[in-house]
View 1: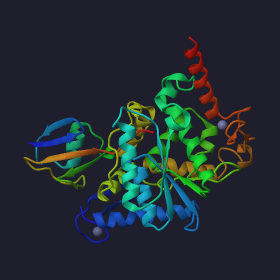
View 2 (view 1 turned 90 degrees about the vertical axis):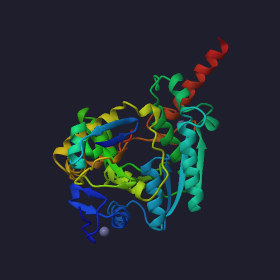
View 3 (view 1 turned 135 degrees about the horizontal axis):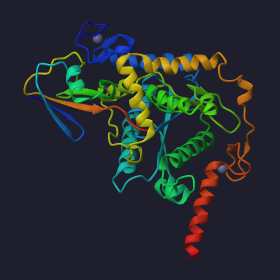
Length: 63
Length: 315
Ligand SMILES: [Zn+2]
Ligand SMILES: [Zn+2]
């Protein structure tokens, strides 16, 4: 499985999909987050592989 | 996905520009674009003194970083609002701004609202009619007042803020829904100086919020990730989400909404420019320009706070 973390929420999703499809499965708008893997940013066409953790950084702030 | 400039692995794909870039080329591209917008909108020059309003967030610290890199004379101003407990939101954001200025050897003005005016923003919000327990309106009013005060006192030519395109589009979206014409007329990348009011500029107004977050992260800028507790569930976040739903289905929509508004305004869609000039005079208390009868809305808020204080002390 792929682990996706957004603030305090942790999601598990099946591997082999692009980041874009994974986000849409989870109902997360790609416009509102940046995805990182081991601290490196990745683009939405990347395929997520089994066992990895993707950390999402929320980019939208108020005010 | 490959970087358009060098063909190595891209870290960001900006669908609205059909542009993917690697880390070094993105970190070159964004300041170069900022420079282009500063010139395009005639915000300021390298001969002028710039005051950057910093909150500790990604946008304002990135803006300061970019202006320093581009060789502008940019000092910072941080306003301590007194939000959160000790070591909480305000303390943490202040620390980040101080560290940033020390690391880069830049001057930072710090104004502590409680020390200066007797109460924190949450206290003002509780006590005054304007607040009605909603801190954001009180906070905005206080920040505008203090920023202008400091800019005037130290003779800065321009005051700049880190508003990005998502901020601007969200405000415009709200103002359009309510047909708040008078606010729409004053929404612009640069507002020229008027007597008593320093020129204001928004050099990041053409960048998506996601681009600014990417810039902060790729530049290793230590910014406050925690949200201001009062912004949770705010209408501005709600409007940003609505704009992003449109953007998602139609890349560039957010940007077009803002840019076509600016163009329409330039073409006189809303009003001929002379109608918007308000009759301003000096506030009898602080001297800043106001359209109010006697004192400005900031001083009126302070007075309300004090009335309440005196009353509660008598009781
Ligand atoms: Zn490159
Ligand atoms: Zn006043």
